[in-house]
Structure formats: C-alpha cells, structure tokens
Image (cartoon, rainbow, N blue to C red; front, top):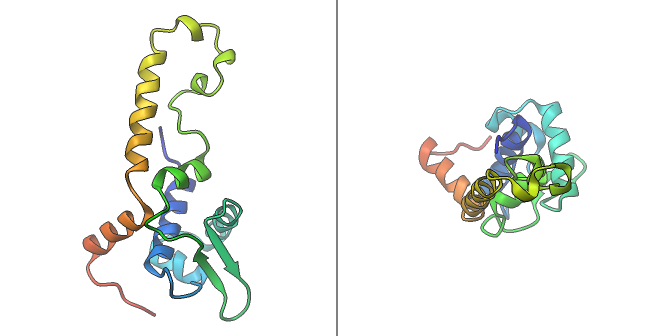
Length: 144
C-alpha cells in the first residue's frame, strides 16, 4: 500500500481537527497553516471528508470544520480507506475476475497477508493516537 499526498494531507487535517475536538469549528486557514497543506487542496480534501461523514462544516465568520466523531473512535483505517480507496496492495484482490491466474496464483496468499497486516495495523491506531503522537513530538501547541 502506498499512501498518496491526498491520504497524507487528509489524515493530517483530521489530526488537526482532533487537537480541537469539542472546541468548535476550526478555519481552513488554521488547519492549512499548522499542517503545511496548501489551502485550495485542503478545501477539496475537507469536502471529501465531510461526504465520508467524518467532519461537519459551518459557514460564516465563526465557521470552519469540526470532527463529528470522537477522534478516539475514528480509526486510521477508516480515514485512509475514505481518502485512498482500497487498501489492497494489488488490484486482483479487489477484482479476482480481472486476473486469469487468480484461482491458481501462488502470490495471491502473500498479497492477502500483506493486506490483512496493513489493515490490522491501521485499525489499531485512532486519529486521537496520531494527534497524541504529534503533541508528544512537537512539544507545546500554540493557539493563534
């Protein structure tokens, strides 16, 4: 599995929102600045995260974005799947009929193990866990 910039930035946006969980909406400019995400690209990601049911958006001068769910209950696997799509390391795991050798492939069980291990790791980590790691690694957080 290779995480694209979309997946990386999308998770970073969720992590930033986790830092502010329960405090009200956070403006896009704040998320973009703190996480180093270009704001126009962030706006596209936030739309996708809203459609996936992870965040809500509020318009207006006091508006912004906020997590709908407690970040302790939002698994990294859910976020990556919503942002990236399939977690399979090879396309034939999602579409066995698309491969002539699917039934007799000696590599298929290996790809399945890789997919299962990846999923197991991503499911074991919450967005809150990542936010805590970020807090621990960067020291104090400063509010604007």
